[in-house]
Image (tube, rainbow, N blue to C red):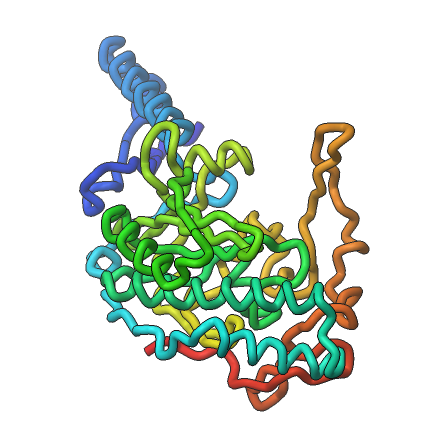
Length: 365
């Protein structure tokens, strides 16, 4: 071992972000001194003990925290990070009625399938119109409560790839709210449900926040995920109770803790078409390039469709789905997909039929 002093840096999470970097130095000095016969046994033992304490403290911090060990990178907070920019809430510009939404959906459906709308398709479009109407109204009501809200997870993906709810294997709308004020969130949900009393909708608490369950007429349920910002980071927290939290949900369904994102992965929001209206989506696509949709990197989600695993009921276990089955190109003729043109225009197309063209993703300023 070299006689040169060794400096080791460890990262310890504490409440004060400005004091979260600790340095333990000279832990190998005893080795150098022993080589010269100048260190007393007591001093050597003291330094060894200090090194052991530091080591086991670090291990405990790592394995008892909510940090995703597969992606975690120590982050040194700076004053600029802590004093992050607060972005004003941009209210949803238009909250159309169910009838208006349904009329648009039917018009686009006719462009693909002709004037005849089969009963099954009519029921599905009617249900989808209710889903979009509730989504727009809920976003609007949450914004009235001064709560930042955006599409997340599969709905973020659906907006980018289909300009709406994913038309296959998708049963919900996911919203991320950056607040843990449950009173305000409940107030917004109740105001939203009151606009469609004939549906007799209810809502309930879930691990991650709240859920508006599906019904016979509303075939898509709505999940509201509660996030919390901390200095330059943000993560899903849910109700932050031992039996009701994002930590428990992620452990149960993914066997991992909730991912921790940089604040600028989400803010400032962009807008994208979702159904018939533009709604907020995160600042980047990092949230859908995490393990929720595999870890294939940028644009992997845009080339690969469907989950990477399928539940086998008889065997009571998950089976991996072959990548060849998951190519989005296999579905181009059966479902609408977004294609980007050179001028930034986004074209929604099913097979060779153009359903609509709109401006691409824009910054929500």
